[in-house]
Length: 594
Image (cartoon, rainbow, N blue to C red; front, side):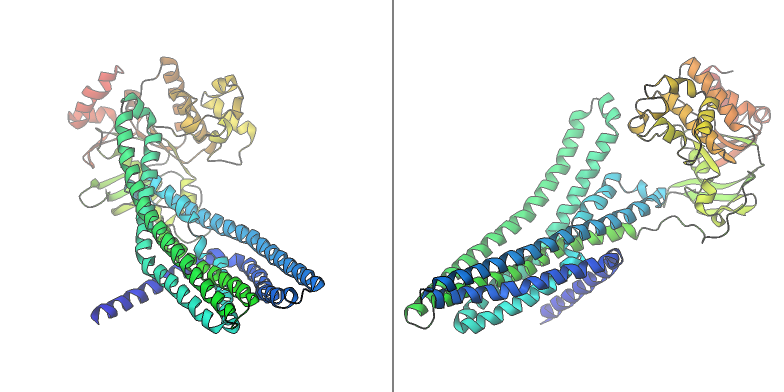
């Protein structure tokens, strides 16, 4: 008894969970409710043909064949043909609507997932692989057919068809109908028996496939490192392990599917054989007719089809609910917080203030501690320190890529949390050390942060960044596709494109992470000049790796282990003889820039 009570509670919990998932899915399907209703109407219109055709076949054999009525035989036969064609035409029409409906709903859901993923905080991606997210958006969405509104309409109509066909079986031959019912009950029971383990195996297969996709994405995006490290075999073995796990999970799922399908198919074949034998005996002793047998077999086939569709829906629901759980788990991840819509704030003047700011990436992962400083509009602040000191984390707080764990960051005296994210980031430019370019035209990459920019403004920005000269030498000029991550351009060319992008945007605050990679002397000089032009008349945060940068800075912050240990100008910090002096002797002078 306790086990039965536990099983009952488990079933209720699963039903509630399924209903909850469907309610969350409904907003994506609501716009297509009329199309779903149209599918239902077309399916309903096809039912009379399925009901009438077997009765006409019964009359064909029991009346017209027996009476050798050729004219009646061809008339009834033609009517059966017309009804069959009409029913199939209606079903084809409904299936075309189904495809349109499902694709629209999937498109809507994928777009929602995409928009949500773009608004997730960067911290989410520290613990989640990109390939795993892509699997949610691609594979899981494609597995949702069973929870679409059209499938629910189908289920209701299939239930109606099953009831009608079973009633007609009882009408034609009560004894045979009970035999058919026993057969269907056995098949339905077998499906219910395997539905729970099938759902678990479906979920395991999806998870294994997602891990496989993540491993593949990581290998392809890191292909340069794989090749230069001569690690193709190692990565192949690693991907092979994920692939083997995915294969094992899929085989376990498919083995159960195939086994159950084979057993059910065998049971149906044996059941039909028994029914035919019983019917033949009843015909032989005069208790039934050949027309009855034909109509009975047709109705039983229709009934089996309706019940089979309901059971297949059950299997599809197991897969769909497993996919929906993962999709909504992703949608439930909290997005970046932005204040409610309000009148656009005035343009930033450029003052920035950190007040006792601390930040950590998680328990035991402290990155910044008690950082306080103020930057006046138009000043240049240089951040120096060894790798891992917290320089990149600090500048990432300015455009609110992260929020402080404690303390407050203000711009123009106003807390950053009070600015709408889009309005804030539109006024903060970033030139990263590792420049990312989209596989789009040079023009689109320069105008990425200012998509409405005029052609003359784009060209002027490129000229100021010393990029116009090499762009015009490209085969298609500003229309040249730069390749994935800008692979068709050199490092110096990509940096100049990034500088042109920010010149065009003209932000109030600039964040510049100086490149540490070696460039030829000409590219180095061009980039330095472009950077100097970009820094004019705006507040600049520079992660400095060159002596010329720190010499020009209005204020230098020296970071060690997430703390500001020294601050001041170049001359003041050299005079202290502390951490900055050690960096100066080991880093800046070592570069030959003294």
